[in-house]
Length: 160
View 1 (cartoon, rainbow, N blue to C red):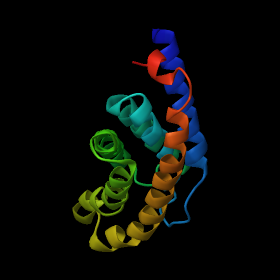
View 2: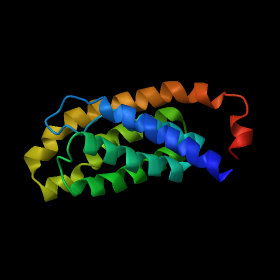
View 3: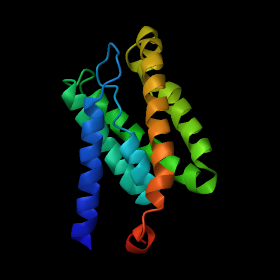
View 4: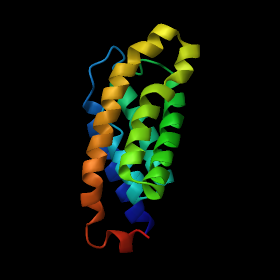
């Protein structure tokens, strides 16, 4: 059973890597479609699993961009873990729509908030548009794919 779970996590991390290569045009370079696999995984595997995949996915995206924010990417990885964990909770408690809206707002405006103080105000406002576009795309892809993936026969029985 452990081997099966590791394989499923590896599959979602690989999908995050593919998404990390699909960059959103920005001056930063690490904004990409690396979150939608973790959003899907958070619903199918649980919030902790999805959060781990989100943190690893962000680090891979930053790696492909050359770590433009250096060690600050560790902060973003932790933020992504928490955000995707929250997405799973909102999805189960309310709906995919509520989870996607909160994900988009939080990913666009709240997660970069520490950089308002760590870097400067100009940097914060510069990255919001790209983060907003990426969050909408990541949320839309997961919202479209999740209902279809949850219908796969045997998924619930095998992973509960």
